[in-house]
Amino acid sequence: MKKLVWLMAGVLAASLGMAQQTKLRVFVGGQQRPDVLRKILDIYEKRNPGVKVDIEVGGATSDQQQQYLTTVLASRDPSIDVILIDVIRPAQYAAAKWADTLDKYLPGISKVALLKQYLPAYAEADQIGGQLWALPSFADAQFLYYRKDLLEKYGLKPPKTWDELVKETQTILAGEKNPNLNGLGYIGAKAEGTVCTFLLPVWAAGGDVADTNGKLTLTEAQAQNALQFWLDTMDKYKISPPNMAEKAQDVVRQEMQQGRWVFGTLFGYAWARFQNDADSQVKGKIGVVPLPEFAGGRSATCLGGWQWTISNFSRDKAQAYKLVRFLSSAEVSKILAIDASNLPVLPSVYKDPDVLKANPWFADALPVVLTARARPVSARYPEISDAIVSNTNAVLARTKTPEQAAKDILAKLQQIYAGK
Figure 1 (tube, one colour):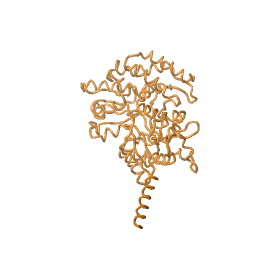
Figure 2 (cartoon, one colour):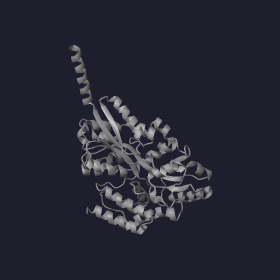
Figure 3 (cartoon, rainbow, N blue to C red):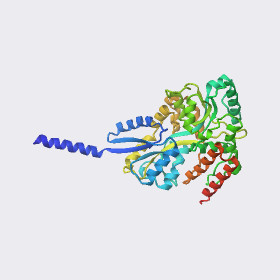
Figure 4 (cartoon, one colour):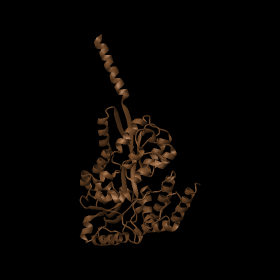
């Protein structure tokens, strides 16, 4: 009888133990190295035996991920607890009430002290209406990747202006006579990264979409000049293939990894893929420098990066917050830097010897990230993005002229910023 009682007690205890286990689900995109995240979550689970964290992997681009997440969150689905979102998304998530503010989980912790450890652009991006909606995961910005071996072969140095880049590319392509080698790769597909492509010439010429007060400042001439430059890379300068309207960021990365590009405007994650992927044909052949400037202008790059937020429909927000604090820590930032070449969100990690050994170019990356320009901050950002992306892509596909596309961009942005 006693044995039966003890057996029943053991079963009951085991059942209670199972019932008390916390289960969390984390959503990340396909490009955001779920393999590295799994390693990080394994560390968290070992330190928190009562917590089990699963990963859900979504689309390959920011747009595809958000299309899926919009469906999930609009239906108030509680199946996802923690979400990795693009740096452009906090305002959208706050306005839609898809995320839970983190302020309520900060008693006893100074928000100012917490955010002071991060790069200013990310601490600012995660605060909307005076409340904290996310914490930074990793920073990012566009850089110019180039074939060191090819530039050295022709006695060239990395270009500091776009005019120099055009001339160097023409020299290398003429000398190589390789039909499989392209010149300048950039994002031109119907994807979020094409917003950055459009903005680079605008910023370099001293312009922007809106000022710090949220007033539309972009002019039709600035938009037209930006669009014309990218069209000229194909039709006038002949340094980019005629199908740039089809090129998403990771397509350019994959093709450069196959040795098919001289230059590429890519975000920081590409470095680790070039150096570490088994199928990379450019190991040791790639260099990284800041993006060029236009003559008489200034160097400009697009701020990227990803943030951790808590779904407003999670059933265990307190545990989700604890996980977010870990995922946004210096320890995790170091792992992401070494294993995925994700740029750190904490300035201190850029000086870490292990990080610099894995990514020597990080020594020069911090100033670029600190001066990177942010895309427009707006609850209606998806509409802003769509206006820019669709028209830029149409110019590259030659279904619109730069003149018409510029007019259409300005017409849509005027409606948005007027609140119509």
